[in-house]
Length: 418
Image 1 (cartoon, rainbow, N blue to C red):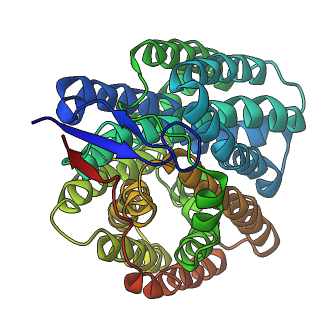
Image 2: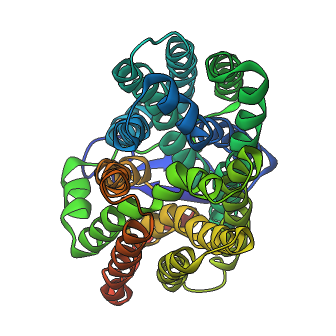
């Protein structure tokens, strides 16, 4: 007797039932190959994106720009990748992830190469913002959805390992950027990043495959998911946490440098955030297979919020390291568990599109947080007021998640025997 999975919407026609291949493909070596491809792709795109703090001061100095104007380059980038998340998720669900990921590699490489040539800061809003934003959007949501669709028993573990690529990229991206900038300048460093990121993403595109179960969900079921109170709490909390979560990636290196740390040591703090996030991503992703995923998700938000209290009190480089470690652990849990929470509450058959919709919240928060923090610092000359405000906003994001515990999980695709 052979187990098969059936889904009423598998053929794209409401009410039809189509048998789908057996369970042998799930959790298989082939599935773990998708995890490896996702890990590498995320390492590349987020390594570039989260290295922006290393470029922040040299770019601001060359163009004579204020902190708020320079940080807008990064904020626009996050807005682009968050807004495009539902689109790339939908395109991947419909046409497959290979063409989407490869396109992201081409656009990202071109955008970084063009950024190396700009003579006005506002041009970077277009070249870097669109180029890197499209690259991240084409890698993150499609690859996460692919990994989620290739696993049943070890899904949370697989997702945790896949998104740990973000942490590894963060560990190495900013320090490598700082070292290259010191020897080559920020423009040539962007050329190096352009070639490397395009090559890596195109390589990953050749490896990635559709999940064994390909489902085109009905519009009615998707709309119901997005209108549900559970999604509303997730979205509101994600908007709120995104206001503050990108602030350290932009300002922590300059905060440390202004207090006497070297440029490399300052950039290394972003790497420490990435290293701690790897522990959060992999540890909590694995733990979620045995514990409550929603409770762990809430705990990640609380840890993330409390870390800003540490930053507020930080008066020395060792304290900044403590902040980076705690913040990274909470941030890693947030990123690792977001896909798992979506699968838990809404199922995997529309995961790419629902996850993409959730991540539009990050764009809203990114457009608010870093520019306002830059404006506060420019006007007051103090980081402390901005950090205190971030602390309060982070606590609010945790409070918005408290009601989520009462919502029931989605039932997985029914398993029949025959």
